[in-house]
Amino acid sequence: MQEFWNNRYSQEDMTYGSAPNVFFREQLKKLTPGKLLLPAEGEGRNAVHAALKGWEVLAFDYSEAGRAKALWLAQQQGVSINYRLAEAAEFDREPNSLNAVALIYAHFLPVLRERLHRNVIQWLKPGGVVILEAFHPGQLAYASGGPKDQRMLYTAGMLRSDFTPLEINLLEEQETLLKEGAYHSGAGCVTRMVATKPGAAESKA
Image 1 (spheres, rainbow, N blue to C red):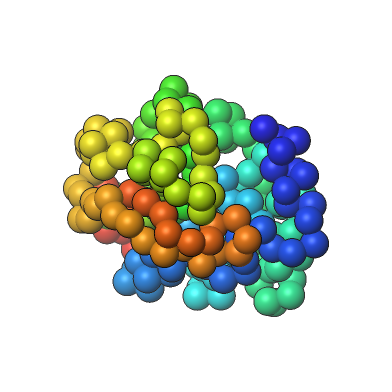
Image 2: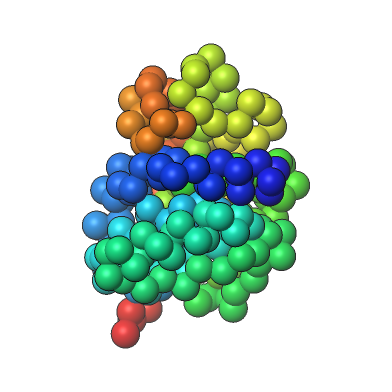
């Protein structure tokens, strides 16, 4: 899969466009900027948007080509992002160190998905927020992108179970119209979640 993503991100055009994911953008503007993590961030469109809005951004992916494009995009926009080359299974952070984590089409097989989601809960500060958008199994009926392996597609029930310790603010499965570059284009079916780690929000200073 690493070779697949390196090949895809080596194309001249931005694979999923240079604009941020709409759901991510709308949810992020409700939060006070602080430390944000973006796993499986690809070409950096969401990371760069967050940096432009004053967030301290940490991102990771295992694609060298994706990281190169993300750093190029950040340079073009005049912002700085901390983008690491890392596997989701190996990436680690200090507990209670992040104000937000955004999982935007960060699809993994069940064992790795559950492990990453448990880690995300640990990494968040009390009051920290998870923003997630991913393809639902219903996406298999559409030709607008996403994994073809049903085990990598997420339902609301699956996310509720994974993030049990968090307070669910929003959790929905719905059809949508994707307009994110050549590979996320057309009608689709997604699962969205916003959840908060219990406890008083800490200072962002």
